[in-house]
Length: 219
Image 1: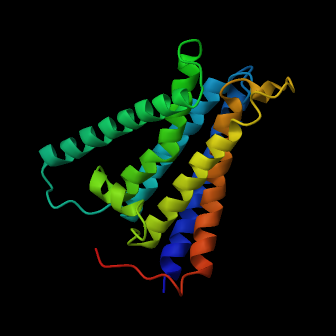
Image 2: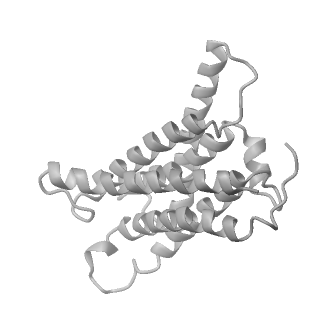
């Protein structure tokens, strides 16, 4: 029943994952001294930019975003402005949450905000691509039994695994192993990326094996 959507989802996820790999490999070949550990902030923004550009392009081409009732230039600019505003507010939200969980408040503010940008690129940006700048739709999707499509279910899985990965990435930081990846916020950002990549694999796989049990309410 959902085979077409699942195939489109798997293809989309493969392209996004490939863009993240390219965002790591290409700068390493072009920028002297580039590495995930040594120039970690540059890597964060490279991956965030790649995910943002590819996600926006693919979801626009697939027509996943909800159709707009108004087609005027002013309305489209308003949606774009609200999307940018929500993304910025998401960065601030993640920054505050990470600080409340124990991240340095002042000493590593740039590193903390960079992690917030990465988390927003992996979670909030996907919400904007799938649901648009509609807070009520976001609340609906992340409430119990709120999914109305396979893309909503996919959104739930990828966002949950991304946040879980970032949270689990914080566990090794206080340990006295003296590893380069224990420097803030390397382990958390790596955890977020691995969680996101896991979500890209788990979501279509889970939906495929449960497609006969999936029932969605009409929008």
